[in-house]
Image (cartoon, rainbow, N blue to C red):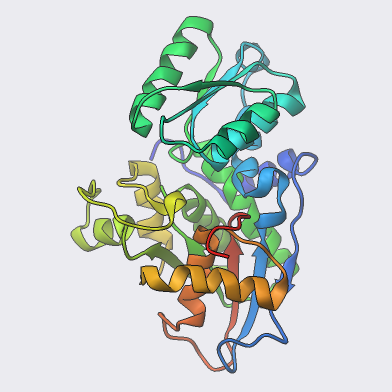
Length: 313
């Protein structure tokens, strides 16, 4: 890792992004009690601007840029929530923004990104091809190339959520966070442990894409050869050094959720709370409701609902 990240970095980031993002509610699951004895609350990032936590990291990254760089424009490659978040940031800050998406991206995703005023380019069958195209655009125009998760400022921005959770519920014992590329859990885990060292962090992956779990088992970064999951936002085949280092240092346990439990979990949350969550969020909830890690009878558990969606419902 390049420069050490401190609690002051997270606190400064929260102050920086606060005018631009929502302090999302921490919803009490009760009277729904899927696991007797525990107290469960849900951090509803599904109600965040653009529908996911990604706006936190995107705003923190861009607001930290020198004005001379920022004003030349932004570019990223993302067929999902980060692309939408960067497009939104560009619209709000009145910056030219390019978002590159894969050929496999959905029409709904493309429309959503374009609706925020970004220039949308479809390029490549794989993410790295879209990423290379975004990099080439920045080489031509100048500006900033924004990585969805392997970026210090993005990680710190995502971690601002942990500060909110601990402000909303200082007594919380355990945070449960889903893992895609590792940007969310890296920031949330470190920020939470810096503020409350005794808190427990549980990372969650879909069984069809056990990327970070495999990295931990083998004690080095791996690239999965095969991924077969119904949770596209958690389908990262590999991670990067900054994310892996933070996960290794701050995440207590990583568990895998069976693929056949994910959609049922989304439906349960909808029925119990009225929250429409994406399957990545449902995966995190399933880790609790299917009791995939040990809990004390009176444990206070907060689950991050990383984004909104209706798949599986």
